Image 1 (cartoon, rainbow, N blue to C red):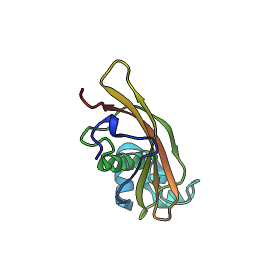
Image 2 (tube, rainbow, N blue to C red):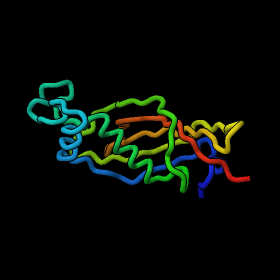
Image 3 (tube, rainbow, N blue to C red):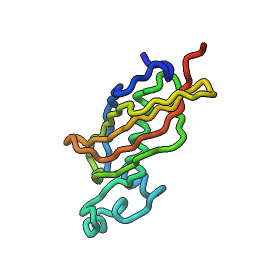
Image 4 (cartoon, one colour):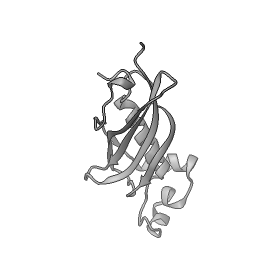
Length: 147
């Protein structure tokens, strides 16, 4: 079981459960946070580069964050971060898509001055067809095992 920075190992892998993205969720999120026609109006969305209703990238990011929190890669510790590297949206997320995330520990740096370390996990969100739709690599702060 992972409880501390010291329990993490390079190439360690994580996989989340699934979440289904509904038409209503796409429109609700967009109406509050990203009110653009291709997120709100199916007819208007047909005439865009997306060729149909698509979730906001920030909605996809929020869903991926929720899935990462549920995975609990840092055990009982929160996912506290200093930033995100390599954030990319690769494919639109559509109504009815079923997403999950998979992560791999790609970097571990123990602090020289604090009882913590920096962990980078590259997360990729996949749809029900196994297509990568989103990726991000948060820079996480994880406590070290007490001496």
